[in-house]
Amino acid sequence: MRRGRHDAVTTQVNGGPHVVVIGGGFGGLTLVRELARARRRGRLRARITLVDRHNHHTFQPLLYQVATAGLQPQDVGISLRAILRRHGIEIRLGTVTGVDATRHVVTLSDGSELAYDRLVLAVGAITEDFGVPGVAEHAFGLKSLPEATTLRNELLRRFEEVSADRARSDDGTLTFVIAGGGPTGVELAGALAELVDLVVRRDHPTLDLERVRIVLVEPRAQLLGGFSARSGRAALDGLRRRGVDVRLGVGIAGVAADHVELTDGEVVPTRSVVWAAGVAASPLAAALGVELDRGRRVPVDDHLRVRGLDDVFAIGDLAAAIGADDRPLPQVAPVAIQQARHVARVLVDEAAGRPTRSFRYRDKGAMATIGRAAAVAELPGRVRLRGLVAWVAWLLLHLLMLVGFRNRVAVLLSWVWNYATYDHSARLILDQREAATAETARGPVPRSWAV
Ligand SMILES: Cc1cc2nc3c(=O)[nH]c(=O)nc-3n(C[C@H](O)[C@H](O)[C@H](O)COP(=O)(O)OP(=O)(O)OC[C@H]3O[C@@H](n4cnc5c(N)ncnc54)[C@H](O)[C@@H]3O)c2cc1C
Image (cartoon, rainbow, N blue to C red; front, side):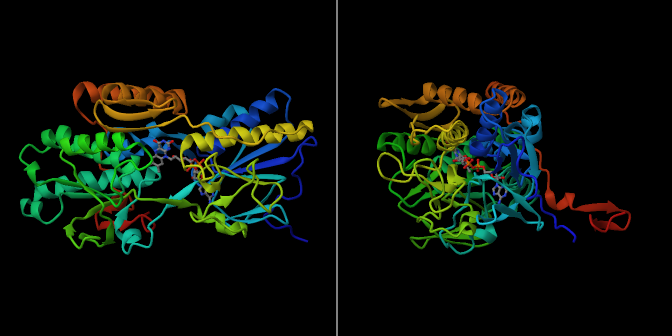
């Protein structure tokens, strides 16, 4: 009989389990490295496989700098094979679409299956549009490198369009609307204001920058919702000083190709809407067949096992782990990293036949930049930093968190360059639409037809 594309036959290596980790983000990458370290030290015998739909890890906290031409895409992304080369981890490029916990297999979008003994889901979150019409069709997301580079292309292109045709400076082409006043929205608004003030002003000296509008829309009464009111005010003052039009207490009712409608009825002409307003757990959560929480996150127990499913763990943005305040933990990188370390401990302890203490999250605080030499930071022990000190702390923390020595050096050099020259050197328009065609003597031909 012909065997299907399925490798359920040999999952045991030297008597150890086959640990399959889905997602090479903050959680998944930390986990496979911890497991490989335990294996090297003889504390674990296991075959380890990492599956991701991208061939790279993405450092999401700096995506907004790629979108505003401060950093190159390769500065915040790193090839999974390059990082894991020396760890003896099998890597599979593919999108997981289903989990069969009875048969212990995951299904990939190409129809193939991968068998596991222990499964860890670390597939993160997607953009949540809260049912607002037009977001999926017309707004830009900022969760991956392709999205960040698409946004960069579009932002830079708007200035070229108005430079070529001045009549367009009043039709909304130079209006940029950012939905969501959380850290991503605030950081993007500040960086965009800086791009206009420092770079576009010099690149397009004849453009009337008075026509540029950056509108940040936040339905709550405060920016940076998870921070103190004082930090929220600091962000508001900092952005307003940089010319950002911050609208508090107003949401977005609908997005169209050439305008957005706000919940107070105002219509803002624009062709550039960035949706930084919310996240929901990956749709893979629904494939587990367990009851999800309100954010469609997967409920887990004290050891991050999916409730009701043996041998399946969920970590990071996907998991609804409950914190000391009885609320689900926030969807931030430190949660994913600490949970990954905990699951590694559980698997090592399980192999040694000893119990593991329950997972407890240690909150290390939160930070957000507002622009050049301006940030807010709230650290444990009620330490509150603002301005230059907070900005330097933010820079150092992000450099430390970045994966890969080359990336750290590249980001540091770019930051020093940008700071010293008031420039953003990564402002290439690399248009995907153009890349999909080949220019021939007969005119442009879609790439699939080109010979
Ligand atoms: C723009 C932005 C800025 C942020 N800024 C900060 C910040 O400053 N500080 C902070 O702490 N947090 C920040 N966050 C949140 C932080 O990035 C997330 O909490 C963190 O990445 C969650 O880690 P994770 O491992 O759960 O998922 P992720 O890091 O998102 O990784 C998920 C991985 O799974 C892969 N994947 C997804 N679906 C599938 C599938 N079906 N099959 C195979 N692979 C799949 C993805 O390709 C990805 O590699 C930010 C997030 C964004 C989007």
